[in-house]
Length: 328
Image 1: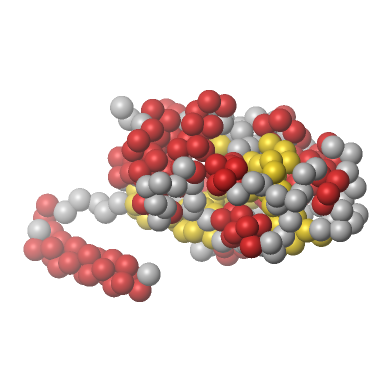
Image 2: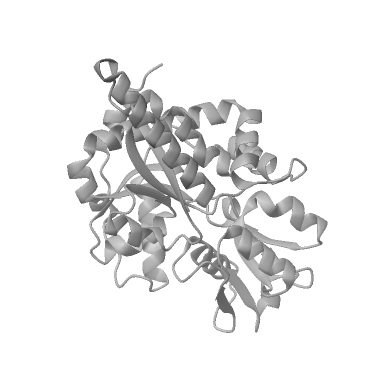
């Protein structure tokens, strides 16, 4: 990281020196946009593809990675990032408690999530007295696991929900025996099969209304950087459109970003699942009924005191503007 920053500084200084020489011909530099994502792994090709299209709209999209889905909220509110993508549940908790946040697009409608069990955990009932790895209270892994238990009629009273970090960390914790089950993305299913693990539940079967990721920003950013947000959403639309029609390129980008080996089956697995189930919509449409389902679920699990009308948390005007400025 230090080397990266040093090289970045050299490029900046070099650019400044060059601009002095050709000042009369200089053009406006790309606007920096800081975007938060969680734990780049087998789906990184989708998440990072929009950065290739930022320049098309005069943006330099800086991807800021977090190890947990619950921490970017603080970074967003403090102004360290301009927007972030997260499970809508995380944002809805903050919104329901008065945080000045807005949904401005949903970039991953379907929840490509799986609840994995250790080889000796054959059913959900076997989890009694054992632990499930999640990434913190109210996180998507936590809520998904709880919803699975409710749907299957299994009590959560005698099950421990352990904070085991990001998606990759949680799966490693399961392999190491630190936890007996974990909820994380479906890209790990090929590896789970090799290790004799049990697939306890899949989101598309048990929680079909559970959207995986939406883009969130603050009311302050909307007021001060509206134009940047519109251009950022347009770059996302282009990036997802490209990713969905360029399998090899997207998988290659995933391997590069997440430092995965060429024989890791995860990137191809999750790519094909996304396409087959139409989990991603490049137009970033937000469905109030899906978001309301998540809000109602949060109330059921007493994560929020009372459910709210999610329409108050949605600003669709930026997405509509982005659709109008998209370039061929």
